[in-house]
Length: 323
Image (tube, rainbow, N blue to C red; front, side, top):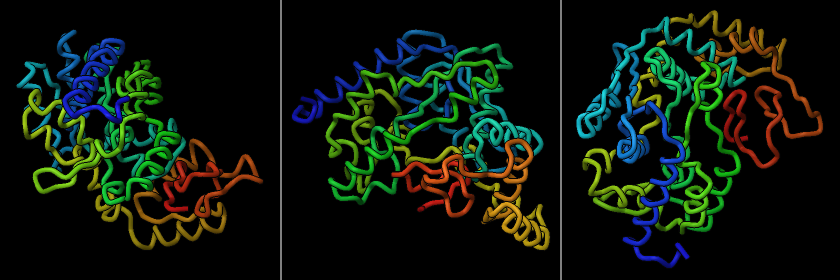
């Protein structure tokens, strides 16, 4: 059993299974953030194919992904297309994301808009298949909210994540007639990750608590140290779209926000929590419609009236958490 194996044996099995998963999911391009997840896939896939890498950043704002992606591209001798998008391009992507994902959750939209732009850049370069790093955080406890949990609670939370995980890269790629490939979700690799004792997923090293610890150890001597021990950074931070709340705070007047917030609460029974969410909701309202439950006997989101899975504490439609 994986549970009782030594560290070196686990690392070997992880690398071996991931190599098989990547070979089954080879693509022409990779959305390269320079984070651990995509860097691992890039180094493995580069053994078998000539990859093109795509990195996106919000023009004029800090986007750390650019530096780390360049480091990996240089290490692997990849052609790395770095694309800086402006507000107009971003707003166009936002509309597609809201329509495709049927969501006005600010975090979902912010992250997915950057993914969509990366996919669009890949398509412009003649790419039809793209590898993404989706699934690694869920399988190997990459999220910081998991770090301080007792083992029993951690195992429970991981199982909840595995039941609920879904990734916008797949439907967004389909809208562009592309295919997103997700090697971390290959059945054999996924089964290995789920069986692996969670004590190998979160560990303290170098004075810090690390998620995905075993993945870091497995590639410690293969990837640059700056990549192996890079702190987990959401797409919105790495690409620069984390500044969007302040952008919308500047662009939408307080009076407009208050008036429209009251209007949508009264007319649609939807609570709008921020100016950014207001912008996304108005798109949602126009292209999807007013949120409403399809199952009146099911669990409802208290902020937007959408149905939510019985065991879920998060609303995929508006982002309400916890519920």
